[in-house]
Image 1 (cartoon, rainbow over the protein chains, first blue to last red):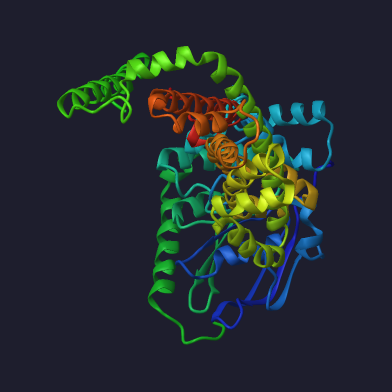
Image 2 (cartoon, chains in turn orange, blue):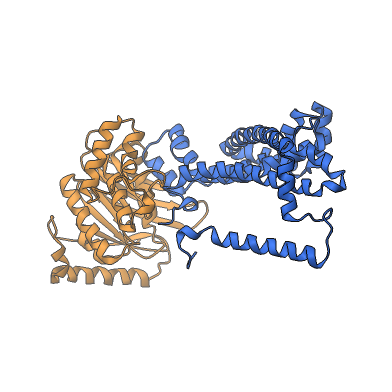
Length: 263
Length: 261
């Protein structure tokens, strides 16, 4: 499998409703340039997870169109990876064989995929845990395995749905730093859904605030810090200023239930 | 469990067993229960030894019949579960009828089987099969249709083929469910075989048939209890074998076989 280039993503006037239900998303337009790290924050029910699932082709838009490098997500699956809220590791496979899974499903020969899995486990800092089963791993380690698995195919687009929400803050910060380090080594475009404003600002170069009822984008914040970013960024006043601004915008989007329609 | 070192796992059941024996002897003495109603434990052990020449070949024979019925139930049960799980339509059409058959009491099925196949081995196998079949179907079907949704989506995103989804996700996911059904079937298959021999047996060389002989003689109550012991042992053997496999296959990943670290 050759490495994918970071993908461009076009979300054009996308709306989504399930059956006869209310609109989950309405008139969402958003374009990601190759290499963008986009964070999506917003209250529960704002459709941020649905947006991610649309990008993965796990559901289709009711209106508008989603394209990755010009094609619909279902045709671009070879170039994208999805990291779920849960680590979704197969409990009957060792950590290493979980990381191998995407390559195994593609039919890669055993020695090659083993070597690749070992390499990725090393990259996520789990050199010695390959033989362990998910049950034997901590929450943070499981997420690292999940991350390694998502990177085996060297995706052009990485979709992350609150992947670190269940972890303690220290572990979460470490994983954020590691995620950026991995991205520097093998660049990808990323969409990252989170409830944590700090996490969103630390990771992304563009941060979108969503509001609920119906789900829509209400603001974009450009995060100007250059990559690579170090852990110390979190202590700078500039970082804290943007976190404060994003938090204020998030509060606004919480506090103003819209009457429907696009902003 | 707390308070007991790991090596003393046998202590509580042994103590409970000793208490039961004490109650047994105590009750016999206090209520003056005659031996043909309730034989004393040592009389049962004596009967076990005295009748060994009949009991050992009978146990082997019954064990063989139970194994055949059990094997057929495992294969048939897993096969039917696969068919039921393959489509919602098949399941909704067939499952109620599986339930209907399951609701028919064994004593009603026996004469039907005997009319179809005559008394003897085929009917006995059929009874052992019918009684141990359903738990495997029910739990395996449940396992096959309750595959974790996140894992299914993972396989979708990873562009897995339908066959890969079945063999690398749905089947392993259903394995613990299948094994719990098999474990229940393992306790039922010997019961089915003995019932079958009791109701439709033709050869005296079996536990069910021996029971038929012993129970007509009031002096042989301790022999009847000896058969109960042998039947118990047979059941434990079956369940033990399944448990061994289950531990081997699941110990790394399933909570039910979690080794106590």
